[in-house]
Amino acid sequence: MHVPSKSYKNNMNFSAIFSDFKQLTKVGLSLSVVFSSLAGYLLATEKIDFSILALLAIGGYLMVGASNAFNQIIEKDTDALMKRTMNRPLPTGRMHVSMALVIAISFTIIGLAILYSINPKSALFGAISIFLYTSIYTPLKAVTPLAVFVGAIPGAIPFMLGWVAATNAFSIEPGMLFLIQFFWQFPHFWAIAWLQYDEYKKAGFNLMPMGQKNKKAVIQIIIYTCCLIIVSVIPVLKLTGSFYIYPVTAIILVALGSTMLYYAIKLYKHQTNKEARQLMLSSVLYITLIQVIYVIDKFLH
Image 1 (tube, one colour):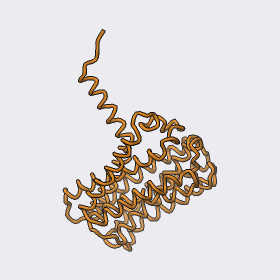
Image 2: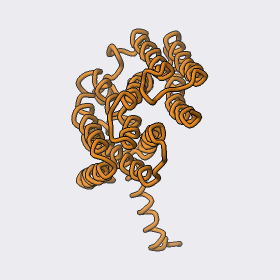
Image 3: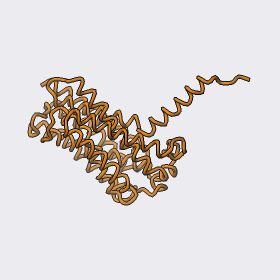
Image 4: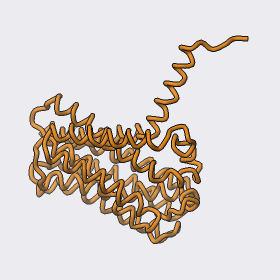
């Protein structure tokens, strides 16, 4: 009988530990947040400093990873009740809470130190993001659907964080970036909440607007999608400082936003998971593409 070698076992153990680490810090989500931060930086800077870009990427990743780790520590018991989360490292016992806490605290300290090395305002917004997500949004999820509004604040900080990292200033431009990603959070998250409604219910979470999975909730989704489209094109009016876009860019953004609106209206008509999933995927595509489009537009000026 073949006996696995010690090196093979060690490789398997390392692979399992690394997989748990990725789940705890939600690597995919963290990287998408880093992407937003880098886009914000490129929008603000006249000359790219790759050392700042690297520090922002690492600091931003650690900031989001810390928030996710703290979140999973707090929700360890409720995660065990949902199929989507029951196989995470903490509910299964593959990772001890003390280890997760060491990772979360280390990420917080190192991440904020890195952001501070860029400038103090970047560290301040990073700290606000971690605090709101961990200390207010996470416990509030079990209390009221209004938790989504609180969660939208730290969720909207990364895009503006990039601008602050480049300028060491908070003004109308990063405020506009914040507003765009803030409004985006609602249709995106509510589409997820629709898909996970029964699972969330098992854990005692009710995060749909109006507290129900019905047409009234979808009306809210449609309203916030319209608000998102409007704020996304406001820079064309040249009322937002140095952050402005060409009219043709605004037309492209309206077309992209209309795709989201189309799926939101379909969800209103049919109220099935199929439309909610289409809305969720279109929202991810939207926020990714508009950030790329903004950056391309900026460098065409």
